[in-house]
Length: 66
Image (cartoon, rainbow, N blue to C red):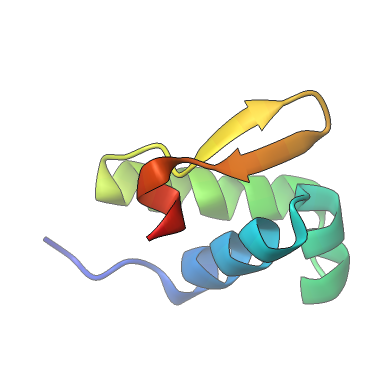
């Protein structure tokens, strides 16, 4: 298994800590779309959903909380 992307890990950490892709994007100086793409790529690489997505909010899944 290949190592996960560092950009994906940064995007995941910021989004999980802040509870928002938009806020993570502002902190990382990226667009919300770029943060979402990094997180999706990380989830595909790991074969796991890391967030439960709601309307304008995200919460880490059990696997994303470890």
